[in-house]
Length: 118
Image (cartoon, rainbow, N blue to C red; front, side, top):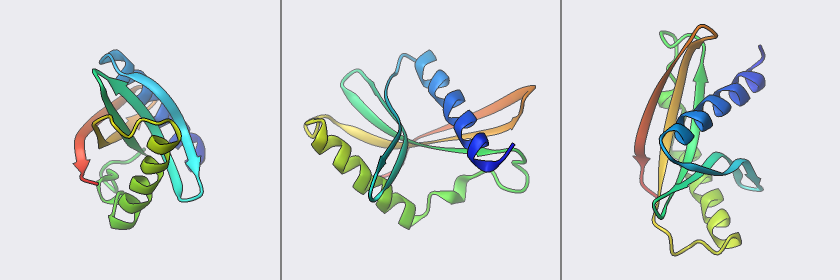
């Protein structure tokens, strides 16, 4: 499986995970000029912008370092555009990271709520 396919699979796993917790998925793969947001979800009047990192071998790289300062700025800018275009600027929001590791037989999900501040 190539990295793009693995990423899409991870996003699907993360979306199902969030839905199982009562979140409603508003957007998947939201792309704008400044970047992409993997998932946008809502629950209880809160929006969450989610970056999903999928790794086959968590010993080599669990994905935690992949959301550096530059990536955070791109996510923040894309989130601002999402909020403006949908007129949702009044809603409280946060940025989460979901790490998906493992393989077909068993996926491990680590959900880091409020992974960084905008």
